[in-house]
Image 1 (tube, rainbow, N blue to C red):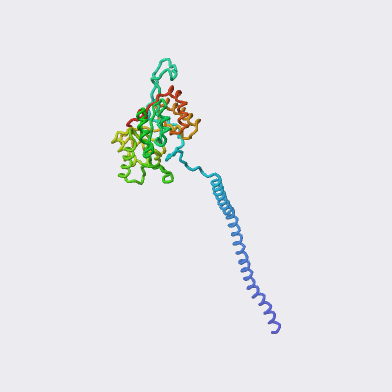
Image 2 (image 1 turned 135 degrees about the horizontal axis):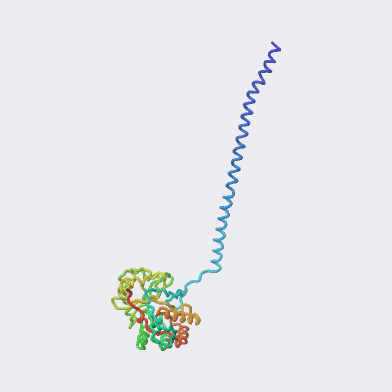
Length: 348
């Protein structure tokens, strides 16, 4: 018995350990393999996510560099501010020539079988017509007299409430110069930029605006027509232009759009109310230097020859007067100078 019991214990003990040991080993292998699989999966996810994160960080860095560079450039080279060249006036940049206007009647040259080109001076009967309007009149009697002494048909556009408006208008009318009202209207830059006394503002109710308009018309004598002073915001609102044109139509006054805005709705409004209408083609002195003004006079002649007629607007600058007086003999050879009222008509 004493010999058999150790053998049984010896046989039984390995079996019991073996069963338990086998379970532990299997459990250990399972436990060991599972973390290994999870660890490998996390590494692959991290590898696939890392390029995306670096791309996102790089994109935000690039945006920051662009914004920072733009801010630095803006500080070093700030945009030019609008300045007033004359009392209550802004001069818009010259627009490209618009020669393809369906409402412009082209005056053809007489047909000749031999197709011979005849110089302008030899055919005065077909000279194109040009009207030159001088805006902002009313502040300088000296400059008004200088322009008035030019041997040419001129139109003065006089600002209401200007200090010398009445005497200048009376003297100019007596010398055969046509008088228009240079009607101040609200610009886009208002109230930072003010159009001056007698201005029509978008914020006015209808009755107040009409009262101001009638007061402006009464303020300048001998008025036969109107053009806008500034007015880039007002002329872009059709209902306001209907109200203004109703008064002009009632008083038999024409309107010339100074075209201070590409969004102007003056033309369709004038067509609807059958107001006699015209529009500015060329600014002579949007830049006040001699070479620019000479260039604009040549552009005026070119456009008039192409379309048959053209309207230019200048301002009472001494430089404008000097260039115009120098170019006048040549100008008269190529175009016929007329008043603004000769180049306006009702729109069909």
